Image 1 (cartoon, helix red, strand yellow):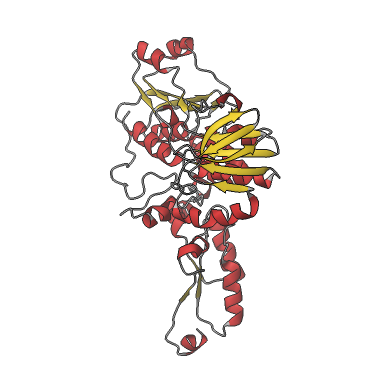
Image 2 (cartoon, one colour):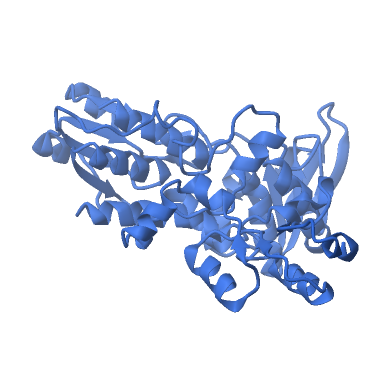
Length: 403
């Protein structure tokens, strides 16, 4: 490299880490890595080379503050902020207009990259549905402003409320819980804690519009009759009701993160997403002896390629055992029998707690009431059917656009 730089033909040096494949997750760091994760390598490169050629800093530089700090310290002359601009195309404009606090953050989910690696012709973003659909999903002011009641302040409810407010509707959003965010809020207790920033962004946007999420509010028939909104958005989520043998002795992934579990834990996954894997890792970090069982041929097949490159390296160090193509055949007196699809027994495990990452049951108790009152309504998020937060953000955006 020094010989190339000595030719004088190089005007700018772009940097990266790794060579693709299994090391690709280091080139494009996700939420497990801090901002500017690859800058230490750039510093060593600069110390090694004898050159004044400007260098570009790369590797999860997602906030203006980090970018400015890197430039001020002289770590690099330019910064690459590709994913930051995918999440927030108006990043520079918001900085120029003193709206930095309203920048939609890149949360490191790497949905944008994983979609491309998975063969999709387009990219996307974990919580910005408008990426590459700017015209289709452009938020236009409504000509018929309505009173909208949003029930539920998880990803879908918050996003629906935010878009409805942007369209000029009068929005009231309530939730029976103590915190905003629904089930996604528990991600704060995992390696993917940065994903919760997607929730905080929406709460902040609602606050900018003078809309406060009302917590601890249980919507009743009488309340609906009294309010009689022009439109109701049901974002009431879903409940844990596993259709598995021994279900009465199982706990949900949220309960496992927020409560106490025994030292020997079985995490059983029938979703194939990142959820169960993140919970298993978090429990192992807490000192639990974790056995991970998935019914799929591989761990988290729907978790995204970059995560699948990185996560196994962590699990091999932290988890007691990983079993693929395993089905929970029986759970009796603290013994879990894991079988193959053909019924052949793989192993019997003594377990203290069983955490089940399984499809949830939509919580739609209010739906018959809304229908009986003949109030126009939409159902979004897990209240429709189990789905990822990525899908909930997108669906809620579209639902609010339709009001």
